[in-house]
Every structure is written in structure tokens, then in C-alpha cells.
Length: 85
Length: 434
Image (cartoon, rainbow over all chains, first blue to last red; front, side, top):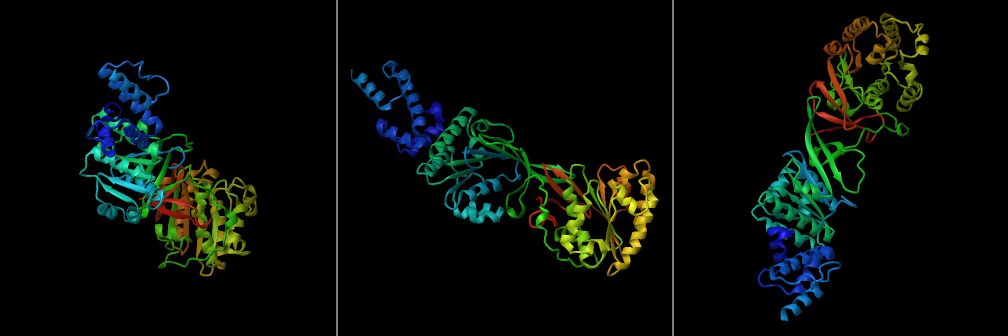
């Protein structure tokens, strides 16, 4: 999120969402992002987050279907399944 | 700010009126619908600086972030806008916080703010003292730049619309004033609607001086002392109707007070319209009885005085003298008003300006020894300008800036005012430009 919102922007969003301590629950995180940025803004941010995670953990980009319409819940589910495997 | 304009940048140097404009936008949002985030001054001090906006500040949320960091300030905006609590948020000034960032971080913070406000539907107003283009210039929907400019040796306030996305901009620059702590801007001069003329109420003399027939003109110039000459100098782009707003009230007042007047109208004047306006303002019968309109550029007018189109300045002077003698007898106290257009006389005697100047000098000297008053309308580019001004007791100047007509006194020295017709088609309204 830093890459898009900057350090201050990210910090203020996380502070406002009360999600500064632990890795947040993705669904709760998605809900709060939607409230702040709307569908389009939240999707853009989530896409950036997932892309960054994919690069860090060397996940398959194909698996996350990052092209086309982005479904955060489906992507998270796919990542969880892949991680368990 | 409505329709497509959701984010606005108001920029300009210190003291140019940015905060007052931002507060006007906040006021327009309605009670309880706005928030003011201040990184410069506390609420009490701001209320002292702009007393007219005290109520607005009290009616809206005020957040003092002088000692907060940028993160907290951004979080405040999210809190204010997320539950759709407020419609308008003013950030005064954004620079004070943005200067904490490097350029990339600043751009990201600005994009965050705009994305948040876009989603909530709130309007965001950024106030900035950075004159050059910064990152936020590219992000906001509208940019207003406030400035102070020179107009004929007087300072006036002007704003420039640099950008208003999705909105037609018919004019980019406007004059404005902060009179009484409120933002008022001036549209281009609009001609008065003479169909709304009311019966004129005479204005009595002021401490031995003749009234100019308009409280606004009297406040500006202090009336006309008997024997004095007031010269009204004007630029070539000053609309004719604006000059008429200075020309007609003194004539109407002289007639309404039972005195007489002679008018040598401006080039292009419609004598029929002038007579009609005077009749409606003063009452039937009076204009022709105690007023002579001599249009020196119309052959028919010259013929009625037995002059030809080849009349000399001396011949015109003789006619005026004879008419003065005739009309003086009809004046309640023998006082008369002479209103002359130098441009009309210059047009007639273009090849003999020396004679014109000589006759005008004689007329001014003669009038100085009488109880009459004299008003000269002088084009700013007149070849005899300096000579006329040197003989004038007082000197007012009219010019046009951003389409608005402005007026000020050179002698005596006065502030500068915007001339409009607000309440009455005959009497001018003068609003000081401060």
C-alpha cells in the first residue's frame, strides 16, 4: 500500500481502520477499504497488495488471476489453498 | 463548487484573500456540513482576523492540526468524510503539511486524499501559498489563483480561474473585494435598465457644495464647490453608460433643486434617450425649461443656434454664454451646471485644438468667478489632457479591469471603487476594492 498511498497515506488508512497491529483479516480489510475508497479504489489497492505478495513469496501470478475483473475473496482463497498445498 | 468540481486548489501569495474565499465556500456548504482543518492559526485568532466569518467558523467543525503530523491530518479527513458527515472540507494550508514530504510521498498523500473525498462525495478545498505548479495542480478539478495587481497606481484584487474541469469558463480573470470581510467579485459592467427609472429625490447641498446627485459620488468626491471644475477622465474602453452614470445624476439633481444646466453630450450620445431619462427622473416639462442639450456633433443642433458645421470654438463659446444667461434667469438661485464633453469638442475642432484649449480656459476662468459648477469629460488619450487637468479643481478617473468599471479620485486622492448599477438605473453604486 505504501507504493500507492505513501507512508503517511498507508499509516492514516490503517490507523483509521484500526488495523495497525496484526496481519488483518482479509475480508474485514476488504470491507473497510471498500468503505474508504469505494469499489474501484479498493480493488486497485488490493490488486497492488496481492501483486506485491506474489512477488515476495514467488506465487504464481496465473493462480491469482490478476488480469481482468479482480475478485479479492477468490484470490485470497486461492492463495490460502496454494499455501496449504 | 457544484457539479463536476469536487476538489479545488486556491493558491496565491500571503494576504491575497485565499482564506476568505475558502471560508465563503465553507459557508455555502451550510451549517454543520463543513470542516476547516487549520495548520496555520487557531480558531480564535482566525475569527479575529475575519470577523465576518465568525459565525461560519462556529457553525462548522474546526480542527487545529498545527502540532499534528501529516498522518493524523489525513486520518482526520477520513473520519470527517467516511460517514458522509461533512460535505466540504477546507485544508488551510495544505503546504504546511505537504512540505514534510518528498515529492513522491507528497503525490501519494494527495492522491489518497482525493480518492477518499471522491468516494465519500465530499468536496475538498486545498489552500496553498505555493505560487508555482505543484503535484496537486494536476490532481484537483479546479484551480483558482488569487493575486494583487496594480490598476492606475492603485492595488486591486484579482482572481484567475486556471482550471474548472467539465465547466465552461467564459472569463478567466475577475476583480474582487474583501470589503467588510466578505468575498465579492465583479462581473463585467452591465448596462442599466432605464425602464426601471424612479422619480428622483433631490439631494441638498453639502456644506456649501453642490451635491453630485448620488450619495456614492458625493462620498467619493465630496460634491462640487461653486466655481469649481471636476474633470472625469476615462479610458477609451469605458462603456458609455458608465460615463452616463457620472454625467446624469448631477444634471438631474440640479434640475430637481430648481437650478439650470447645459449639457454638451459625449460623442455617440442619444439625445432623445437622455431627454427621456431626464423627463422620467425629474418630471414632465422641467428638462426643456431649464436644460439645454447642445450636441455639437449634430448639424441639426448647430442649426437651431444659427451655427454651421464649420463653427469655431469661439462661436460655440458664444452660444453657450448666451444660453447660460438665458437659463441662469430660470435657476432658483442663479446657479448653473455645465457638463461638457471634451471628446465631442476635440472631434469638432481636431485641426484647431489650440483655440479649443483657449476657449475652454476662458470658460473655466469665467466659471470660477461665478457660483456655477463645471464637469468636463476628458478622454485619457486627449492631446490637451495635461492642460485641462492643470485647470481642474478635482479629478476623477475611470478605467476598465477584467470587464468591470473602476473609479477613483486622483484629486482629491481616494481609494478605488467598482462602479455598478445595483439598486437604481441612474445612480451608480460604488463598492470599494480593498
